[in-house]
Length: 134
Image (cartoon, rainbow, N blue to C red; front, side, top):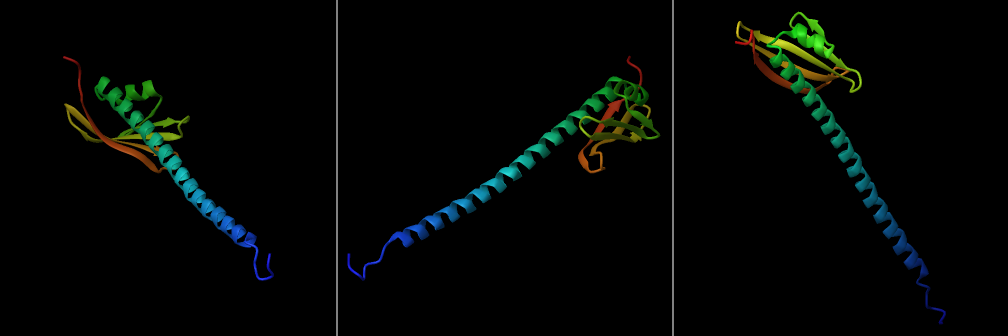
C-alpha cells in the first residue's frame, strides 16, 4: 500500500449514513399515512354508527305513526316541544329529532346526531305518515 492511497472506509460509512437517513424519512412518511388512515377509519365508523342510530329512530317514528311520546318511552329519550332528544352514553352521542312540518297526514323532521360536545356527526331529513292504521 502506497502512502498516497486512501482508505475507502469513510466513504462507505457516509454512504450507509445517508441510506439510514433515507429509510428514516421514508418510515416517518409511512407512519403519518398510517396515523391519518386510522383517524379516517375511526371517523367513518363513528359516522356509520350515527347513521344507524338516526335510521333506527326514523323507523320507530314510522312504526308509531309519529307518536313521539311512544318513541321516547321505547328508546328512553326525552320529549321536547318540537321533537325529542336521545342520549347514547356508551357511544358518547346525542340524537336530536326536530319536527319541521306537521300536518294531519304527514310529519317531517330533521334528525341530527352529535358528539356530546355538540359537534355534528350526521344529519338526515325524514318523513312518515301520521294517524291510525286503516
